[in-house]
Length: 118
Length: 109
Image (cartoon, rainbow over all chains, first blue to last red; front, side, top):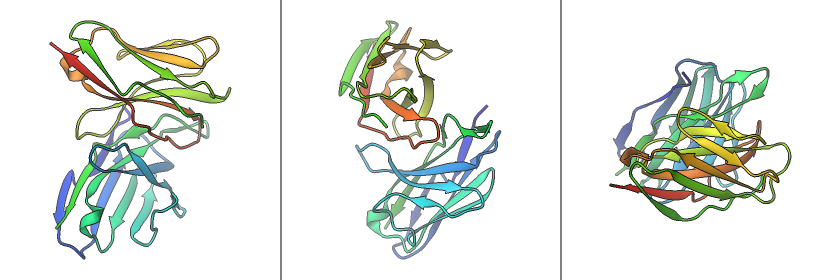
C-alpha cells in the first residue's frame, strides 16, 4: 500500500517550453501533496504544498507563476514548469500523505522526474 | 520543527547490523522522529517513525532514548541494496518534512 507514481520519469525539453509532471496516489486519497526539487549532490528542497481544491502554498523563493501547481482531485496533483530554462534542470519529486481521522500522516514519495532543459 | 544532526557517512559490512545515530536535542513533545532513505536517483523511501517508544517493522528498528534527545535506526542485517542516504527528521504531525544532508551509508561486501 501507499504507492505514489510520477509521470514522466524523465523528460528533455527545449528552453522556453513548458513541461507538466503528474503525481498520483495509487491506493489512497491525499488531501495534501508536496513537491520537492533536488539538485545534484544536494538534499531535497520543498517547493510547495498542494491542497486539493485550493491554491498551493509556495516556499520562500519559489516563483508561483513559474511552477504552476494544480491539485485536481484527491489522487492527482500536477506541476507545470513554465518557460523552462537550463537552470530548471533538476530532479522533481512529489509526495502524498494518506488522510485519516483528519490528520496528516506519513508522507510517501514518488519515484521522481528528471528534467533536462536544453 | 527541531533540527537533527547526523554523521556525514558510515560504512557497514554486509550481513552485519547497521546502526545509524541521530541527535535531536531540541525536539518537542509533539514531534515525531521520522527516518527516510534515498537510494541513488530514486524518490525517498519511508522507513519508520516513532514518538517515545521503540518501534520495529519489517525494514528496521528505531530506538529512541528516554529523554528523546537522540535516536538510532537499526538495520539488522544490512545488504548491498541498503546503500543509500538516510535522513532523520523531527516533525510534528501536519507539518512539512525538512530534509537535511543525511548520512551516506555504504554497505560493503
